[in-house]
Length: 314
Ligand code: 8YV
View 1: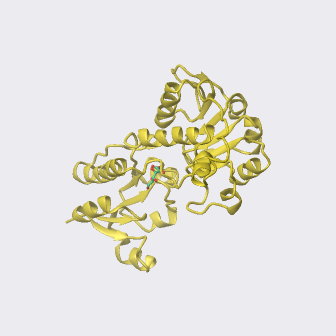
View 2 (view 1 turned 60 degrees about the vertical axis):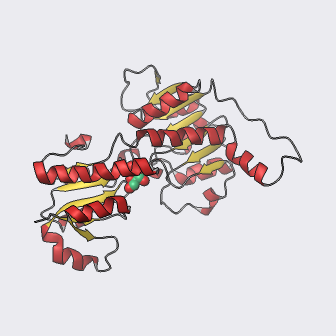
View 3 (view 1 turned 180 degrees about the horizontal axis):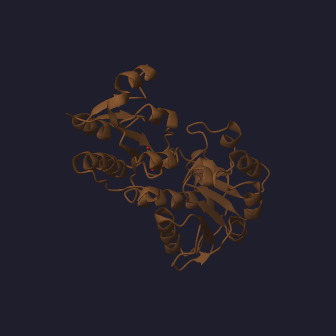
């Protein structure tokens, strides 16, 4: 008999359709009667599929006593209660590696869009202003310093791209690594030393609002904040205030605290380039993420092995 699984995020058809062929899928997102769904099927649900940004409450997991695995369609699993999963012996898998390059491309894009003023210049041309006056001069990126918060797989891919543009790299994180980049032990000193501060660390309680007013003040007028990781890592009201008061030069953001809602004050900031969380949003990468998300379930239910168990559980 096909295993029962519960779907707690809205999934693309290229993942949902194959899942429906292999599993009895219970849609917790579209289902109107959620308590009814849990009452009828909770006892025999063995797998859960969620998105990278989905928050999974322990109360929901309590209602799934037969659950064996959570397969995250995304690399970030900050919405998964990992300690709880560990105590219950649940497998938790994600989709690392396959999205690294695309997310790093977005970080580089945001550096180019903010640093070289490409978004402003695009508006300038569309507005018919070019025949009226010359384009503004911006700042050369080669030689500027990029500080990376979180030098994991994505952070390293961002560093490689910035090196290719002649930029200098420093980073902070839990520990120094064997890499040819300068390690700065604390975030505030890193912010003070760089032109671009790039947020590339995991979200979750340990990193909530660590990019705060103090860090932004250290980044200062010379500095631009780039975030491709999680909105929760940056204190969004402090960021909006810093942008409004010219405390920092600008921001390039792909992620926000309460997606898809962005405070109107932040939306209004001319010195911020805003994207709708598109780090992994290419057809190729989303397909690869979908394939890996399903492969983890398939491998667990056929061989009791998973392909990408999260670090805390391995
Ligand atoms: C996706 C992400 O938007 O991988 C992640 O953690 O944030 C993004 O790649 C999301 O996971 C899709 O569910």
